[in-house]
Length: 166
Ligand SMILES: Cc1ncc(COP(=O)(O)O)c(C=O)c1O
Image 1 (cartoon, rainbow, N blue to C red):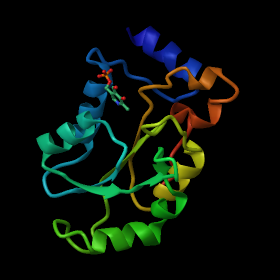
Image 2 (image 1 turned 180 degrees about the vertical axis):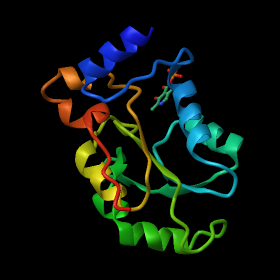
Image 3 (image 1 turned 90 degrees about the horizontal axis):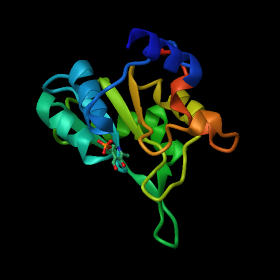
């Protein structure tokens, strides 16, 4: 198993890789449960799968939702870059009724691709959000093949490193 995980990390361009046996649902619960605790704030892409919410319910962390973009045809896309900016995050935290003002979010969750298939430029999104939190979970349940396709590679999260502002 250890060899397989190492080889997967190499294939996906990551430092490390861990397999889960319970689908993305399980991964989406493991990450919040290992990074957050009761009272923490977590930035959550409104596109998120219910397993992310389940994970937060189990830890008692509070989701602070970031609103996804929606076009004139009703298609739901990713959260706009402006919504990921530090000043917008601070303002969202400040007016959230259940979160202590000024608190630094313990983590953030992006769903890539969004509900209707539009993708983030994940590197740029991580760079923006990384100013507001130390951990970002990118749920790429639909595109595990992304690193191996030229058109999708910019959406492959495992190859990106997070450089924290702190
Ligand atoms: C974005 C996203 N995350 C997580 C899941 C859960 O995946 P799984 O069925 O592998 O547990 C799904 C399932 O559709 C999904 O669309």
